[in-house]
Amino acid sequence: MIGDGVGLAKGGVLEGTARMHLVLGAVPGIDTGFAFVPRQVGPRIVSKWKAHLEKDDTLAVDLSNSPEKGEKYSPTKTTLRGRRVEMPADAAGKH
Image 1 (tube, rainbow, N blue to C red):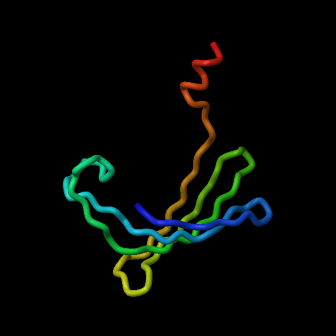
Image 2 (image 1 turned 180 degrees about the vertical axis):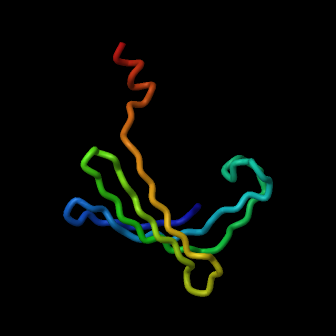
């Protein structure tokens, strides 16, 4: 994806909006960021999101995606949950 967005903190919740283009690969299974791989830009979408820490310190992010005016895209909703982990390089430096 390529695009930009903004967000604000409001009472323990981060929320904002991002506008972006989907980048579609022309070769299945190959990362679109790999040099010289054919790709095309897909529909423009608007993503409204909210993020908060749950009681067990899990970060939860809820995204609602819809097409930008004039674009064809089926609206989607996604929830991501994750926990902070120590990076292996940081852990190795402690020994």
